[in-house]
Amino acid sequence: MSYAPTPPPAGYPAPPPPGGTVVMPHLVHLTIDRQDKYSRGLGCLGVLAFPRYIALIPVLIWLGILSFVAMIVVWFMQIAVVFTGHYPKGPHSFVTGVLRLLVKTYAWMFGLVDKYPGYSTKP
Image (cartoon, rainbow, N blue to C red; front, side, top):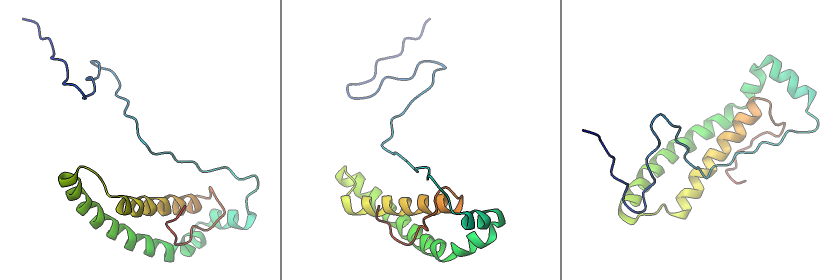
């Protein structure tokens, strides 16, 4: 007896081929431009590591507070998605802003950019 899979209902993606790779499109795009010239002083701090991390303590505290609030917002918005079928624009902007600040902080911590991340969640 052979097994013939049933086709998916209308509007659903076709199942992946057996043993194949599933590629899911995402709407996330991350670009960190390579600078033409980097600060040698910040490079020295990067070699020593600790002064750069110490300079990030206030931002990491702020990021921890924002991340905690974002977790609560995400939880409530998942409930909203269940009932309304969409993610409201304001909370979406807040959560993406927190993620943006996180990426800016990591980029500065790893020496990819010289501009200090600051505290803003704006682009």
